[in-house]
Length: 96
Figure (cartoon, rainbow, N blue to C red):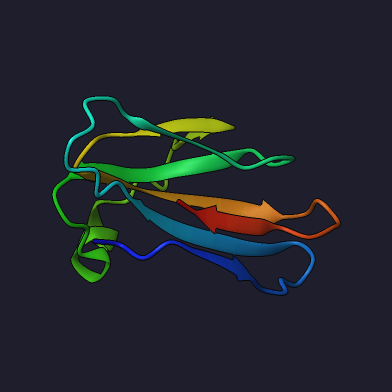
């Protein structure tokens, strides 16, 4: 089981942030929606199973990634997103 947590971290204004989202749902049959308030992000990669970020980086779509503000992470799958922290204020990532 993945622990529930809340993280607060300071980011430099205009810094690039990359987050790996893993959907570990066992019973659910729907994608888990992810949204960052006040930001659009690029979807660099998606897949099923456990994400192994060091070996996944070679398959990142850095040429023409999708830009979105909402993403459905598939059950038992993962997604890697990247965004620029250019919206002043606090960014709180709540993992449920």
